[in-house]
Image 1 (cartoon, rainbow, N blue to C red):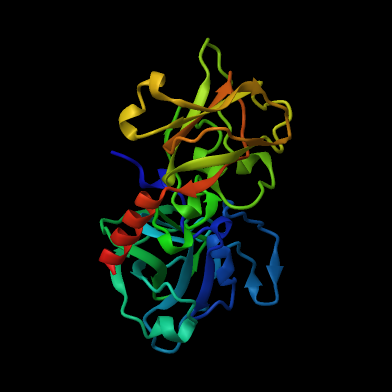
Image 2: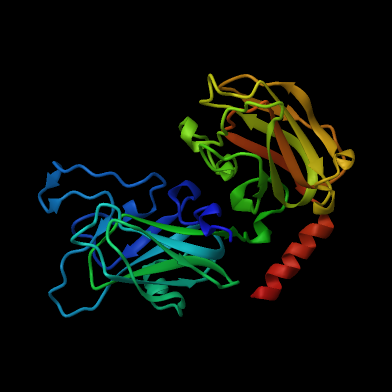
Length: 336
């Protein structure tokens, strides 16, 4: 069974997620919920309001209310496959129960409109444990833009992870775009090794700020090489690519290669692959920006690194072909 945590965190600050509202945050601020890094703890750190936590913590309820809530705007809208409510370091002050709801509102709305919206329950009121990564699978095929975490009756949550598949608004995909970008619907469909960090990191927006924000595989001790395959936002013509090894100094690949694949039926037939970047030397800690001379549209790209090594970002700039773009629009509008 696939672990839903293999999917990217749609709520993460790395994708520009935001905690837009919370009923209370007296002890610890709501924005901590969507930090990409794990929660940390210092036994010595206290402030004027009490113990300092790297999470979201509400006061003890004395008003008769039964719950506290926080609303997160997903950095990338999509289909949610599972939610993690991480109560790391919260031992005597965690919520014993939680629930999760979601809503789709593509417009830029504020807390008032969100609170008045009609929400769909993804996770019914369920038990939660303290100092634990509480996992809640979700079986709902619909696209959502916001989630609401409810804790009963109060307490602290370190992190909220919302794992799923990105479903972008295709109206935003016209013209020349990064066809591989996670926020545009690019997704890693195959990876030879993900020992140190997940491969979808290479599709995140912005520049990596450290080696940990890229994809790093283990050191190979055989004659093979590592690789990852990305399904693009849509079948399109590739104009230029960027293979970025920033922050990988002693562990960058020695060489790289990028090929295009017309369709999923061609994944296992290398004779049909289209050269985009011929095998070439790769430099450490370098953005390799390369013009592509290929006219055939492709649905996927495969990046090979030789023999192994880390990549910070992969960009595949091009345009979605008109037939595919119209199909994406029709499918999106049919769901509305």
